[in-house]
Length: 228
Ligand code: DC
Image 1 (cartoon, rainbow, N blue to C red):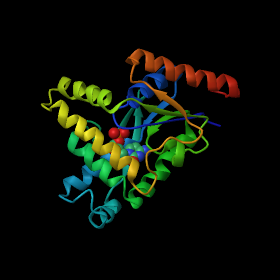
Image 2 (cartoon, rainbow, N blue to C red):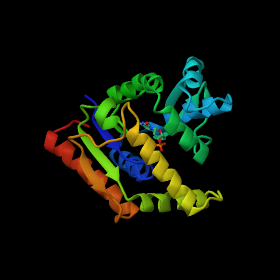
Image 3 (cartoon, rainbow, N blue to C red):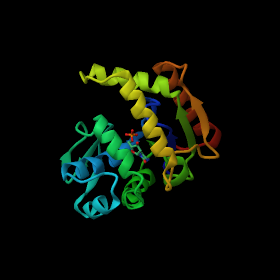
Image 4 (cartoon, rainbow, N blue to C red):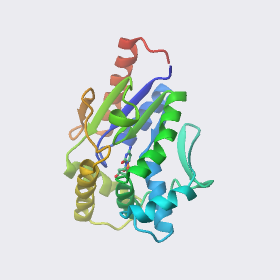
């Protein structure tokens, strides 16, 4: 049985960085499920449709084939055969992904793909509903969070390093809006699973949060006698 680790938490908590580094250290596959919602939003926006409007989004799903490929341990997301991994990292697509992810048909459309990857590989999968919905039997569930201000600070640094011109206030507003959307939607809202371990990394630096995640996973593997 493959080992499945679920990491959920709000936008900008550093889930992907910690999960990616831990996966590399342990030889697991890192699965970024947010990229799937982002690729749906990318397609919807490319068609000039409204990500918030289910009547416009749902008919487009039949035109989309999303795929995750793992190249040298790095995930790339493909949409109808085209690698869109880099194009889905804009603030507009972040908000679009948050909007389409509230549509039940979009969630069920992406569900099997996520399940299948976890059934076939040792994975560290990050998202919003991995521990609660996608992998309810995960070997370890971590709820990874940090204060909204700290998350906005990190996101702002990331975007300005990439040369994007955004204010801290606008990034904080986006973080707050996405938190609200993601945790108040009716279906599979962002919330800590009852059996998840809370990991607040507001006061941890990157190395410390990576170390913490790796040691939690190693401890689980040894305590449960899991075979990796
Ligand atoms: O992790 P991310 O910021 O790339 O995710 C983008 C959006 O996708 C997020 O605001 C909510 C949605 N999402 C989701 O609803 N469920 C997941 N498992 C992952 C992401």
